Structures are given as structure tokens and as C-alpha cells.
Amino acid sequence: MVIDEQQINAALQQLGFATFRPGQREIITNVLAGHNVLGVLPTGSGKTLCYQLPGRLLGGLTIVSSRCWR
Image (cartoon, rainbow, N blue to C red; front, side, top):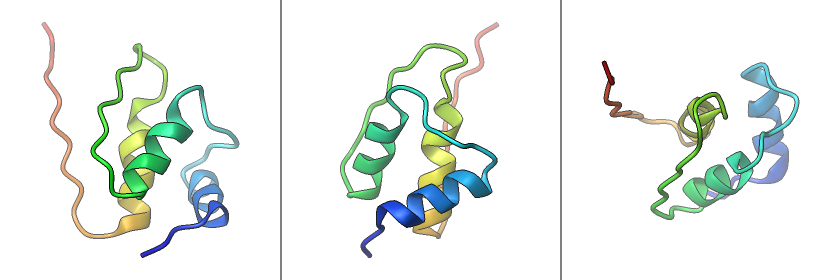
């Protein structure tokens, strides 16, 4: 499945965003290209979009594992 820039931008808008934050586009395009990606971003930098957008475009099941620090 080939996903083009127009589909990425449409999904971005559907999720309520106008633009990407630094690092997001690179992470997302690599995930969509089928590469393994480790995205290390600071708190509040938009990591959630980095799994929501590919999950929406690729279909199927998206699993996110997150550790809760207390």
C-alpha cells in the first residue's frame, strides 16, 4: 500500500492538526514506509500523533505500550 502526501495531510487535518511539529513528519513517513522507528521526543511534543496517524492510514490494529511513571 502506497500512501501519498495528500493522504497524510488529509489524515492530519481529520485528527485536528494543521501542521506537524518538529520530528513528527520524519517519524510518521518512516513508519508508513514500513521501517522500524524509535521516536524519542520530549513531553508535549506530539508523540501521540506519531502512532495515531499511521494507525488511521494503515488500518488494522495499532497497539501502543506506554509506561506510566509515578
